[in-house]
Length: 365
Image 1 (cartoon, helix red, strand yellow):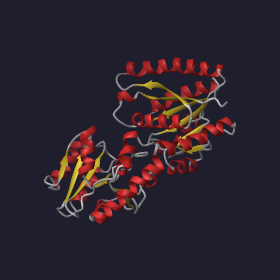
Image 2 (cartoon, one colour; image 1 turned 45 degrees about the vertical axis):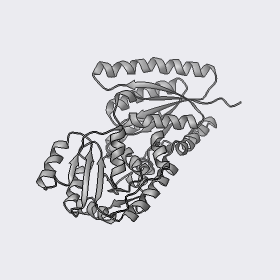
Image 3 (cartoon, helix red, strand yellow; image 1 turned 120 degrees about the vertical axis):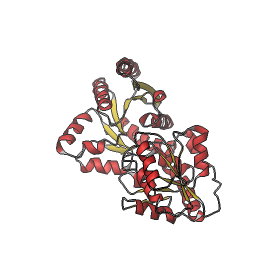
Image 4 (tube, helix red, strand yellow; image 1 turned 30 degrees about the vertical axis):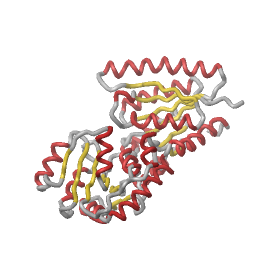
């Protein structure tokens, strides 16, 4: 009888983070369980002061050792999956725990989440640093095919698997339900939901609004360090009647925005994946974004959204204008729901996880 592998998941405490890696980890754990593994989560970090961050790391060492010792007595395959953000401290913690796990006889997987990987591979010196960092890993997992190609082009020779962030259960439920589309071409309400930071492209969406007819409206949901400058931009372009800031939203308030809006726009050139894209597609909204990096792995251009090849407000405005027809928006939205269920459901991700487990069991990795 086959003994289920044990996957020990190492990552930040999802209870103390509003988004990022911590938000996606529960979906990954669900995929591991569907793949047939027993799963245990070990917190390595909590947000807050230094002591609060350091103590979980120290505790994680003890928990990791106990878990590996116990599983080894039962002759189980042990896989330690380190979910790694882009910060130096996150990488340092996972490097140490990865080395410890390898020493104890476990297989080690590094699941990369951080956009900062892009900068770590930008020069020969930083590439050497990155190669040292991933040395403990038997396997490196990335979020999209673009990232795999990028790492391979940079000379990373570790086995690389594509394991995307899975849809949360609630988003899968939304994607399965048909959307009630407004059968009017105007007015059109655009939703931009994001942290308001440099690189997210929210300023370009606002500038695109100045190029669109008056029957287009924009709702901006989120907070961040760029909020004040974005509000100033709206003032300077005299768009106060057409652009609304509604702050950080969650739960029912966020769902109401998805239900009320017609297009999702986020021309980011910062995200390593973009969970906001998945949520928009699950809700049946066509997406407008830049054709940058991993974005085209998530948004099917001319099928469930439009990707601007020129990184400029006029190019964004043109894409948004092309979605004015509700018939086109509905067609793209229906396609988007099918696409996220096909490509990003926990079941689909579990299939890819199973390939890694089988390779470990067959000692091919």
